[in-house]
Image (tube, helix red, strand yellow):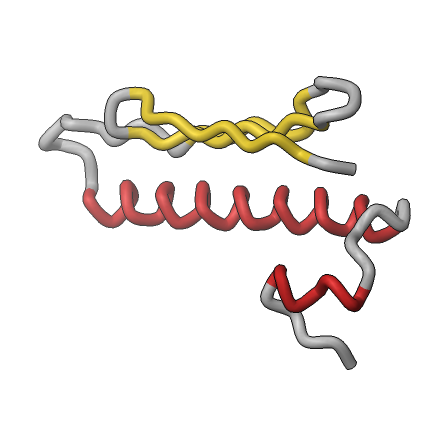
Length: 88
């Protein structure tokens, strides 16, 4: 299964969308949380929210990759060097 990846900025917030090329269906949509300009907002709370958003992104990417693996849609081992993995 091939994917088309679309990234953009909405203001200062990056977004990521992943589409299945064959069906055109959206497989994942993610947007970095809005950064509050309110001086009363606790900076530690903002940092925690940003970290949680990044963790959520990687969790969703992991689940998408796991689904591909279970369906047998990942590239063959001979092609794994293109994706930064080492063949065992």
